[in-house]
Image (cartoon, rainbow, N blue to C red; front, side, top):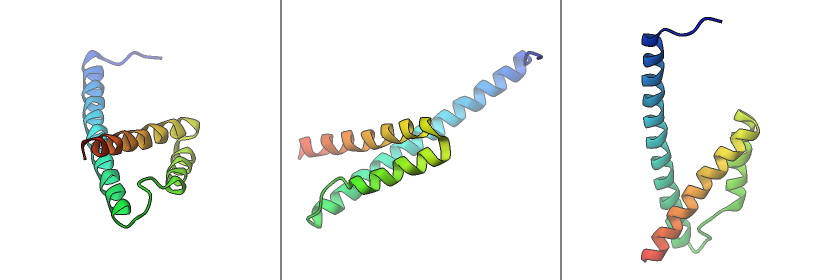
Length: 91
């Protein structure tokens, strides 16, 4: 197996850095939408968290990425819950 050239490795690292930046931006965007949805549900008299929806997310990620996908989905839902808790603590 041949080793990548230094220029090729730099290019791949730059590409990964770009992907990481995009993933972080998407996670922040997702967390913000979770906060908005929780506020809407509370305003309608419902629970801030819908466990059935969270389970759908877990299944979706598991189906797409396997067991590691479930771990990713758990982290994402936890970020939404932590952000929700932080907002309620300020209110």
